[in-house]
Length: 487
Image 1 (cartoon, one colour):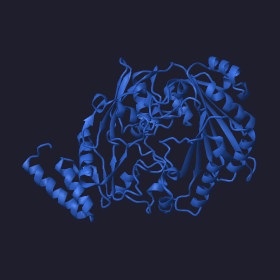
Image 2 (spheres, helix red, strand yellow):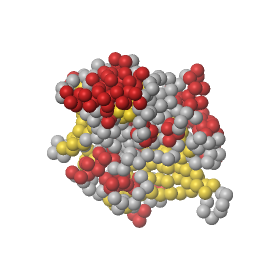
Image 3 (tube, helix red, strand yellow):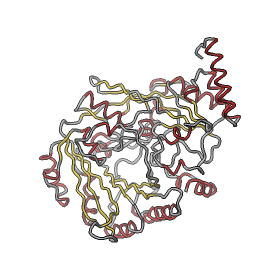
Image 4 (cartoon, one colour):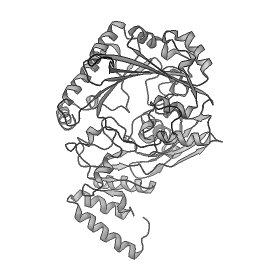
């Protein structure tokens, strides 16, 4: 423990007493006292009595339904400023037997990094302040602390080089910490695999409060943290990642069409077999026809990113996927960093600051995921389309696999969906927070998930650990409680 001068000690004790008196929970007082013994600044500790407690709690909550009043709240939020602070949190939580939830980006679908239904009381360890990034272009690597977002990481790499990148999330607001612990995929996955496949070292606080690197933790633990799930094996502090090569010119396109099941079926058969420099995902959603006030249409947007120029892309498409009808006029040549702007819906000439903004979402949702190993028949796609029209704001994202994802053995990391996986489904439905339609939307997406059972991976049915789904992880006895509190 760091030494404290007598005057600072007296002031700190007075502050500690004022905080303790402002809290009604003995657990909060005991935790604060324990943290104080480890020289933790009181400015990093928030209890429900603090005026900023709620704003800190929801500051990284990307699904607002988990910030509603009925959802259980932590006894305390701790926002450490250094590795030693994290060590203190782990030691105190262990000594006092208090469950601790760890949050880096807070981008999880079920709020599991800041909500606990079963393990109560609990605290939240919010790692947002641990966000330093050190890029070494000469050695093709970088150290990135877990509180940084992938957008911040991408931008820092691009500041140093326009021919280096990193294969991680499409969404720039995802936190680096939890993203890599679950695997982490993005537009470079078919070329370079997952984010977890490109980690070469890490720093972690274990259950005893020790800081370990790869050599100290051993290869078994290092294997487990790269895809085995966040919060399972300790608190990740930072990753050392391997940078990958990207060309100076990257080509992007978005081709939006009214639903064509034959084209969808064709995409299934070719997307995972395309040139590994080409990534084409599909956004399927329901839109209202602008020429009428009532007709609702299903549209499919084919979003592509190609590591190369437009001329070469058109050649690849004409040979392997001519059915899409892509021409050079549909293509935009840009840089790798700006291709991320395009795939997130921004013009490629927009400010790169858009990739570093830490915006939270006002859109509450329920999400589910599936992996597909055989083409879904057209007749099943027709039924899928009918079911989409039954919901108000459904979205399905089709993400292609293949390429490097089929070359890396499934035992290389704890991420098993490798060879044989053609693509991943990601289903969404909008939820009206606090409204009467939550149950309706939940019923719809669960029914859709049930309908898809014969057409997706089996024995077992696959799931992506970063897309947490309480329907899969809570037993029947607990489900009624979870549904009441959250849905």
